Length: 321
Image (cartoon, rainbow, N blue to C red):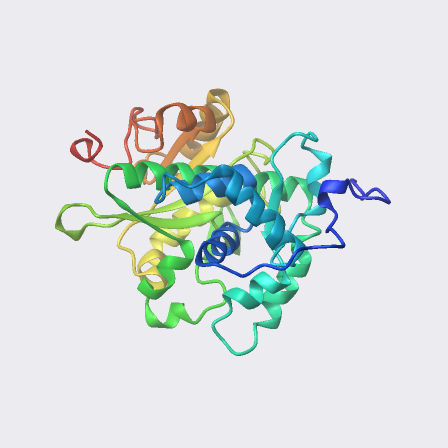
């Protein structure tokens, strides 16, 4: 198990002498962006801001990040120095003052302050998973914006949910009764992200759940009680569809589940397990691609594969043209 060294690398230590500064609307947007995706590298922050403001200065953003970190609006998770080089972009999470900045109440939610404190101790594996999830979501936002589409991502979806779901602490967590063979139990599913793409003809909205697969989870399993396996996810999403949970909890008539994984052989194994579990039922609901394909061609390109076909696009061809 990885443990912290007695002394953190200098770039992860908060400076003693920090010059005063005045919070700007850009600073608020930086903190909001990081809070929405939990963790972002400095390069991802610049990239996120440039989606809607292409002239954003890289150096100016880095200077603001230094000040926001120095004044406790942001934190630099400690475990990042176990898996990135000294020259890699710094990873940021929201700090205690950032929570207060984003709070709409007189006093910030104690649970959010606890999460901000916990951000400093995020494990290396969770950090890698979170950064790669953010990479996928930024790519989707970039390409949606380029095609004059609108990404409605996770927290922005809450006001669109059924009234009862809007008040839930975790509205995108599904609790479903499931069965595998003679096993009957309740499965808890929490996608890495739930999002919609809007701006399509006839006010159509396409809904998706993202599952980032780093190739570390077991694909097949004889029991659903294993903590996190691909089998558990397929059985769970299938069960959620059969009981109408997407409609009742999210107000969505349909939702595709996107698996972004490490390699084509990994996809082949996932397709084999899916067909074994549910056959060709819901074949168009589960789509697969690799992170390399997504980075090379873009998430809206025909890079997605199902058990029935390959070359699938998330949006109609005339939208991408």
